[in-house]
Image (cartoon, rainbow, N blue to C red; front, side, top):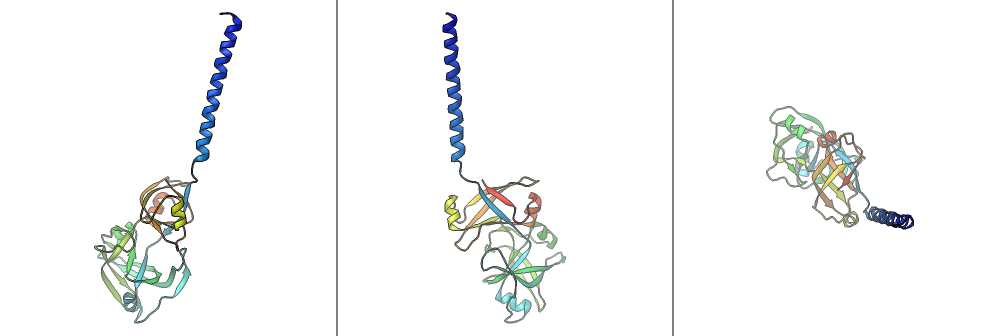
Length: 227
């Protein structure tokens, strides 16, 4: 093969390789551009708290007593009350000044962390809100009286509130379970089994308790991402 023919052959091979590389790069760019936007959710850290039904309010604070609002909470219609109670378990190590959240519920529910359950000495299960059958017993003490519930204390499951618009955008529905990862945490963490709760009245937020927040290095208003 002459020198000219060899140069021509090498030139064709180089041009063919460059064309192939450009095709791969263009394909990669197309994939990147088609990737859906990140499903980012702000975090709210929930400390121990109580939701009361009126019969328990009557016992703890007096007949006909009405809760008074201290401040509104993130979700519309919900508020932190000025009133607090003391929680007592078999170990007789009380948790004092536990905030009551309104509005009044049909059934009293106490939400604590695993650490709180150990301090109180009660076998509180991880449950979805309202799933109280077979949950842990707990005693509540108020300024006018005390009440011992045979069940009602739970460790609230990790969950995300979102509107139907957000759920549809992300291909989710009420009571789905998703996996969530931290984004800018010094203790990178992945949370599994996170319940999706969908309602027109909900604003987007993920609720975790203080144990989960501390373990993952999260604070209120940090963001996590649905994977």
